[in-house]
Length: 295
Length: 154
Image (cartoon, rainbow over all chains, first blue to last red; front, side):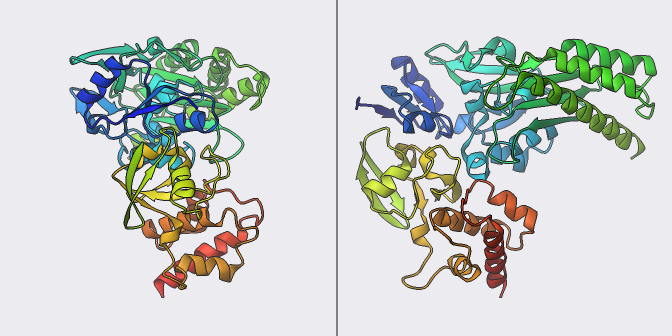
């Protein structure tokens, strides 16, 4: 048994100093990923850095039209408090179980960078940036797709910690949905976040668990924005969108996936699941827009 | 490393290997074997405890993370020979078969009733979704939660 050391910083500055001095240290927050690795002897880091007590990471705030979500905010707190972001709330509610949601954090999803991380398609649809920090007050922000570059692969430097995610607040309906074998404790077989940005007149779709990392569906997004434009539906949400266009949109979303066969499902099933999720999400969003219009 | 933690209202300390989970500290160092060790990956909920009042899987907490905090385990519920209402409800409903999942389900149920004294079936099922039982098929567990909720009201 190799000797391990646990570092227990109380402030962010202290944590960043420790990370600079011990760049190989493995950060732990809620432990829902890291502890499994330790319990099963899959990893034996020489040093563990506990970031669960850093008040700086457990906050959120509005910043000039944008929103900053600290890496240490748990899914339980998002479900309870962040009602202004329905898609993020929905994704958070599908994470694990009450026990897992009380511990698991958005920073953990980002750090692990699994293509199945439930919060990640939402952050991708938000066009979020990931904010990283190193000792000496140096921070940098990377667009999500430059941060997560492969399955469980990020470009975080060894002396950096994840501070949180930041995104521009967009107006419009949106949702997160996921396919799995149960409602709880399930790793997504496929997941999807769809958002309308009424101000920018764009639609954003992000897919989880159907590629090496989170994927956007730009072709489907542009197709739908054009359909809505041509129908006059951006100005008048009551204008019906033809069912054929909804189907075409869903097909294009599925085409954006790059799924593989694995223990949780086949590539063909995942592609089909994307079609179904896209159709449902769009139907919900269109009906939300109508409801908002008639209210 | 030496961990000092308040467990069930008592200041306790344990000298553990730094990679030790809170579950292992409770069971193997402090002799509190009520929290069960089954999956060690947060899937089964058998090790459910409260950490600073929040329901967590003890297997997913590094013991060092619990240092200086309050841990409450299933052992805190009964007062001597007098069972906690949730424990009594599980006995009365016949919600216990092999019993391995029972401590975790009791803790999760007690946690639920603290937050929602009159949960409906959907709420109960969602609140207990992180606790697996391989014997009962859950129906009697749901019955037990209802009985416990009624007892609390009475």
